[in-house]
Image 1 (cartoon, one colour):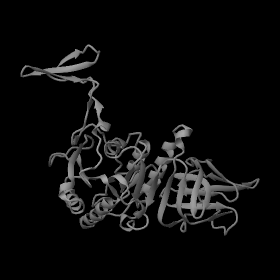
Image 2 (cartoon, one colour; image 1 turned 45 degrees about the vertical axis):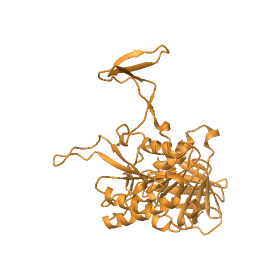
Image 3 (tube, helix red, strand yellow; image 1 turned 180 degrees about the horizontal axis):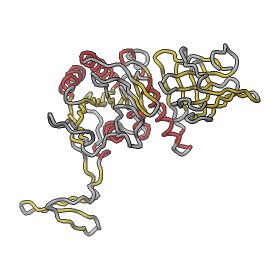
Image 4 (spheres, one colour; image 1 turned 30 degrees about the vertical axis):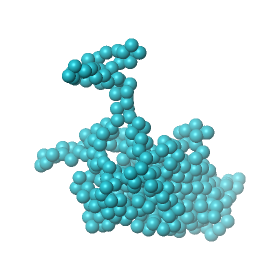
Length: 398
């Protein structure tokens, strides 16, 4: 009844505008990346730290772990990633590399080698207040984001990331209301009055204390271990990429760069080789689009695989009760079967899966119904995936 097929990618009619590449960064320098050389306004690099599993994901029954890098592997990876970023950036582009104090020197060396030390702009300190406290040293409560420009003419718009000063009480300042009704706070120095209006924007410095990390109870939480808050990526993209330009996330993990770029009207490229990263990024882009009004949904994105997927598709017969009726095939999730992380029904055209409907298969009795020739794309709890076609072909599934 069902047979598996191999696919080289996916084409979604909503969730974009962009491209998700599921491939190792060491193998993406060629035909997957070259068409985009010199086009990106901003590249955000968020590599996995050495000693920690790449692509780690944990949420309910859904779990994944990746390989663990040594420091030497990490340093070599940074050189390659920074080199790719340099190639992708336009002359007015900017790169941001997210790291920490311990790994910072290796990252600075890679950035200086590719861009030149003169291209350094900022060492951004992102301060957060969550987690435990150390008794053996001062608690480590910040990350470092290095900012380098490809040229002195790089685009930068600080006005896009200002926030209203607000009504927070200010010591030693007197509150007043101007003749135009605007509230201000004033102070006098050397006989001169300085006024600061509540509705005036305040622009961030290179120390960011106003962005919280994604914690376990956050509605934004996807389950990805090193998920970055969308607010962090929004600030980077708004300041460094004009509307309609291209933002690239290398080691995009949870798809934070792609998700923020899509929400801000920028196109995106999201690159990661973790099966969990692909599943989370795809799911976030689709679910975000489905919450929008219909006229805002239709912006496509594609998924490209480094090699064809589906040849080793998992056996789904233990998960579903299968029946045929009226020329249609029904797959009903069995009791106590582990939920499906992602499901979509569509067609396969020239090796590319094109979904037309997205399904939720999480509880016993949830169903997928296929017409002859239709394809069911499933991502299971261990993030293995398969493409299953109903109809003519060698039957390899129930």
